[in-house]
Amino acid sequence: MTDHDHAPPNRRFRPLVRMTARDPCEPHRVATPLELLFDLCFVVAVAQAGVRLVHAVAEGRPGHGVLGYCLVFFAIWLAWLNFTWFASAFDTDDVPYRIATFVQITGVLVLAAGVPRAFDANDFTVAVAGYVIMRVALAFQWLRAARNQTGTARQTALRYVAGLVAVQVGWVALLLVPGTVFTWGFVILAAAELAVPVLAERSERTTWHPHHIAERYGLFTIIVLGESVAAATVAVQSALDETSALGELLPIAFGGLLIVFTAYWLYFAVPVHQHLTTGVQSFVWGYGHYVVFGSAAAIGAGIEVVVEQAVHKAHISQTAAASAVTLPTALFLLMVWLIHSRRAKRGVAEHAVLPVCAVLVLAATFCGTWAVPAAGLAMAAAVAAGEVLHSRPRPAN
Image (tube, rainbow, N blue to C red; front, side):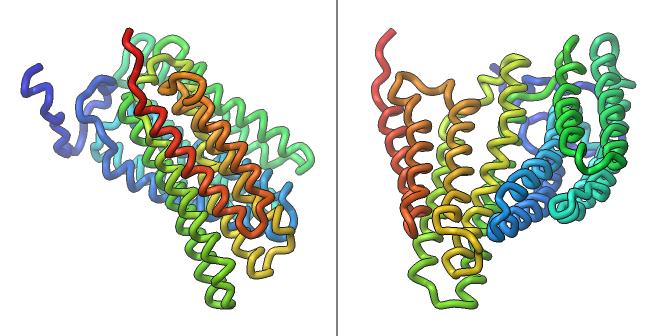
């Protein structure tokens, strides 16, 4: 391997670049500042969804809260996913690309502004308007990519355009249906959204970069975990401003931080990009992160609920409040094991660590005021067990 192979590619800004597929084996491929800005704008939407979930659960309406959160978070996650995979394959970072991305960011902010209405009243008008803005820009990007492709690669790009436009028309039409059938229509269109990439890439896969995609997903995981830390911090601070219940709040803060820290540790314990080798594996891993991201963000909302219950602001029992933390935490553990870290495990003991930890976290629901720290300690024990088991000498072949 020559020195040239180790050198980073020349990414000096040029006003206009012919949009062609990037090399999926490109060395030193990392997230760009524009991608980081795009991700950070999603913090607003994630925070809005979390606040609405807290209010619904604290008021004793967990069914409404969870359903609304799942629907809204799907819209948030899908918008992020559409841009991320396109950018991995076709990022030119020239003037048209940057302007189109800025338009998509504007759509994200409109989507975020529509989250309260969507959550509280099932009114997705503003959210769909944000999607229209994003889809216009993304369709332009795919048409630009198609213009410079030939053969099956061009067909793939054009299928993306057709699929995105058709489904977006469906979302606009869904605004006109009665509320009683809206949820079923949402499910059908969500399935159609997930089918678009599968159908578009049936002839030829786009040239997304495995290491770059793994990094992008890791960065968004950090963002949603960071949002959980921020939400828990604000909740504890607000409670301290109005009460002297320091003895009740400190264990919650300790347990919440322990959960977030260990969630980070477990997610990044093993590299995953080398496993993103086939279309099926990549789709399962990529789509499965809807649950990973959603549960990670919900942990922070759950900690807020526990804080409100501790200072007698939530109209639910202590066990119900604890479950707002333990359920998403257990779901996060199971999904990280199932789609992310399972391939790096060897032997029954290593495979059992995260599922057993999920069971222990669920059992912590019934630990009263110590539910959150107990869940955090269970996750810390899982980290320790995983490190010890992984460090064992591997048997000789």
